[in-house]
Image (cartoon, rainbow, N blue to C red; front, top):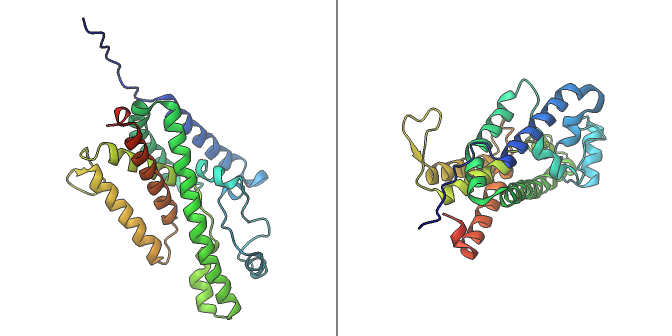
Length: 247
């Protein structure tokens, strides 16, 4: 007699559910307590930059003196989102987390999925901070050379980042790695696209956006790439060390 038992996948597993709840609660706090505590500004991931550059930006009015990197922001930035009217930011991230994250949590279990999600968020922060520091060095050089046009073109180096997008990109990368031939329907594309090609396309767009630095583009492309790369290597390692638990 077989002892096989069918377990129906949870459509809203607990870790994904609680991550979404935390993000929504932080978002409400950003809205309701903005005037008293400036939560959004405190939770943003401000770039690491030389003290001299920070002082120059404060003197020029580009930054407030309190707007600077704090270690706790490495965590808080991934649970906060752009406040209204940019409601699409949190809606897209939370929908994507639910759509792909619930599959991974059902496959891995809650503890492994939570570790993976947080690791991808930290990986996103690490790559973003590294690239922003490099760009801040370029901005400081432009200040030192009194090159006004170069200063304007490099001011994006001082911009903060916030949102769960880096961690969510890691989740999407893991899904594409484990279920590469799953067909996805993507907005404005009239035919299904396999997960592996959709993920490669998103990574390519972020790489182009990060390198090109198009004017008006306020997306932290290297944070997305950091989350995706972290997710890829974690799943690659897990797949090599414990094939029975992955697909």
